[in-house]
Image (tube, rainbow over all chains, first blue to last red; front, side, top):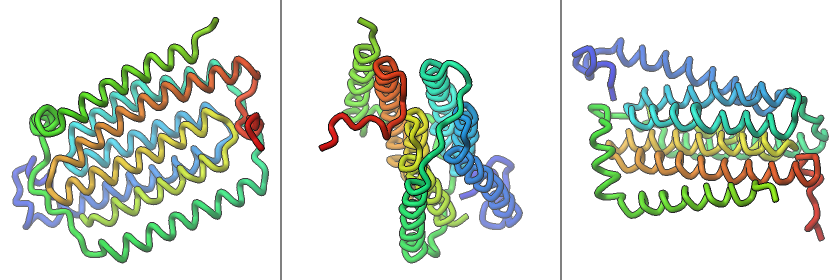
Length: 181
Length: 99
């Protein structure tokens, strides 16, 4: 798994500094993503939450590129940051008028949510550490957009058609639900 | 790089998203937390695709992105309708069908 090593023409197996660079990049991205995600679910200001969501989404696009999935990374930026976040900002604007502040949560509700999320994190992390403790990523080259396209239009053509119909149905449904009459 | 570092990051993001869904009262913020959860799932799918050296995980991540877009469209339309009818998108006050 050394996308960068291939790009600069190094032998992936012998270039230790590439692995170190990848790990440093991963650490930085992970810390930024976790901080922004925590701020997103705790901040009072709704618009700030949307902007923190942008940072998390950009971070996961960077993670996809780091994993060698260039097309997924680009799609993430286009669809999530380009379209979905704008939709969220419109939603905030239409439901609140001013740049409003979210109401205070109840203390009990927050405590229970903390408990559930903490338990979930502990159980998942324990299972992962038990199962994949020494699994290394060994992909030799990044996946190109051409391979992804070939795969979508041959092996996954039925799910692709289904997703097209789903998108159309969701579009019409959203218009019907939000229509004013 | 190890597979586990990506999976643990995704698990942490998933848990934070679950906290957001449970603790937040504003409907738009709940939808945002759902996006966070779907994103964590995407990271899982892509890292397993890299682990197995196959393309299927990436294709399914693309499908998840498409489904997330559809879900946000319908969800925001519903919240808009709610706001129009009740002038309020506090999810704890929507208890019409509570027994």
